[in-house]
Structures are given as structure tokens and as C-alpha cells.
Image: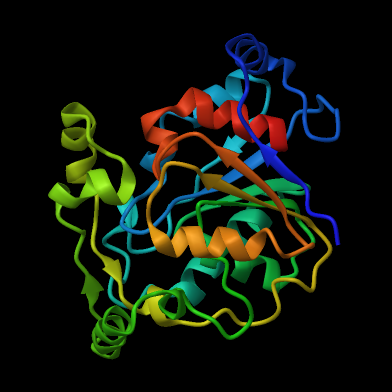
Length: 267
């Protein structure tokens, strides 16, 4: 069982070419792609506002659905918009927009959504990229990856159909790499509480049943042990390719050009 470990870092010249529409994928193709970018917990489509234009500039098409109860959809059944609803959000997006052969990127919590979409077997995803994300299998929830006291708190809140507050901004540097005061000030009013149910609901169906390319893209400077453990496990799983990008968890906001260059090198 041979693992392909790749470091998805491009030189400045290569990045410039990629962002001019001359990107080269891992298979050597420059065919434009459609990227569906799924945001993480407490975020919204706004998390991709710096990266999506760069992907389009490189000749691709992009969609960034906001999950129910979050972002500009925070008014939509916030307390009961769990994982099942979020999976349906994305499956409906694929169907209504008639999207096919898409590269779907799930960041952080959205790895759970990505697993759920794959389990739905729409036949519309060709490449699943887990970006510094949770990778639950059938019958697993995000809470399965968390320390028992945190899992218990989420289960208690989920039983009450309530939300989990946004983590304090003082923790964002260590948690997400958001340390720039201007970026923190911009993101703060956009963060929204998230249904605890989304963290406790399990993936229904087998996300490995459908034949798609699977890649795990690890943010190399994220010190979170949970994601380090997930990455270590993925490197032993022949169903995934493994790559790293030099940056913290929210690299799409912190260093969007590096993130996009890495994504294009994989897609």
C-alpha cells in the first residue's frame, strides 16, 4: 500500500501562472473545473470571499453555498439546522444548479457535510478535498472527534435544539490563525452561532461507497491535535491522497493566493 504524500506548495512564478488561468492539475490537465466550497463551523459563504475570485480568475467556476442557520441564512431554523439539513442544502445546490463533475472542498466542520454528500451518492462529485477537516465515516459525527466533556456539552445543547456560541475572538489566533486585527474586526460580525445538532448528528450512509478522488489537504501550521491525529490516520488510508499547505486553519482568509495555488495543483 503506497501512499502519495505531496506538499502542495507552489513557487511564486508557478502561482502567478495558476492565477492567470494556466493552472496544472495533479493529472496534468488544464481543463477548467467547477469548485463547490463548503465553509466551516460558525462561518458562512463569506469565508471564501478572498479565495473564490482567484479561482475564477484562473478560469474556473465557483459556488459557495451557505449552510442553513449560518451566515446570511442565520435566520433559517438556526437551532435545528443539523448535519442532515446541511447535507440536503448541498445536495439540493448540486441538483438545482445542475452541477456535475465538481471539485467539492469541505473545510473543518464541512468535512462532515462532504462525507454526507458523498454518502448521498449523487454522482455529481468527481473530487472530494477535505481541507484541514473532520473526516467522519458512516455512523460518525463531528462530536466523535472531540474530547468527551465537549461532546457531552454538544449533546446536551442538541437535545434542547439550541446553538453553540461562536468561540471568543481572543481564541481565534490559536484556533484558526486569525490574528490580524483588521481581519478579526471584519470577520467578527459575520460569525454566527451554530446548531449543536450539526455537531452531533451522524453521517447517514457510506461516504466511501461512491468512486471519487479523495484528497486530504492539511494546513501544516495548525497546532490543533485533533486535526493532526486525523491527518496521521489519513496518511495510512490508501483511499486518500495526502497533501500539505503551509498555513494555519483559515488559510483561505489569511493567505488566499497560497491556498488557491495549492488547490489548483491538486484539482
